[in-house]
Image: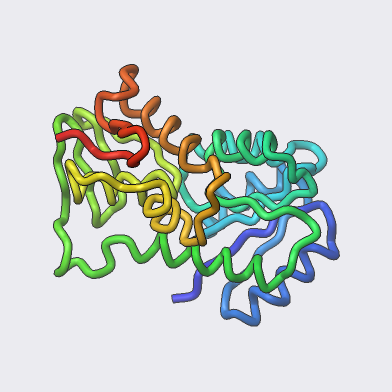
Length: 228
């Protein structure tokens, strides 16, 4: 099955370049030149992943992502000339899964698309090898449909947040280092200065409970574990 990618960027040159490389990789590609068009295509075409520029006319990428996350947890990769750490953290806090700064190597963009598609859509693929669902306290993770529920109510997660929750809940009580979590969640090499893990764990905790240590506990100097 071909996966569909939405490229939302106001620069036609960027869209054309990404389309060329992604179609060569075997993806179906659709394009949006502004935020309003992006939201319409996200609703009507239901792409499997979105490459989203931040600085777009009519409605910027932050607003598009915020609205998208109300109904969907498909992988979203920000592509932007804004490469400051504060911009990356804001994007991750809003629910982005990855971030590429312009100018970029189109081969890197394709590699990140491949990584996010593989990580998100391969979850639960080997249904005979994994449990259909995992329960810890009042949380239930449906591995086949990739849905997390608390007391029966679904919790919206990004693909990275889901991947980390799947790791935590299938290994309750096990301590995972930042490097293990980063490589599992993002599929990239871990950098010591990378703060994506802390941002992601903080967002997960706020979605799970008002008590930050109710489910995911920090072990200073070691890492994190799921309390059972």
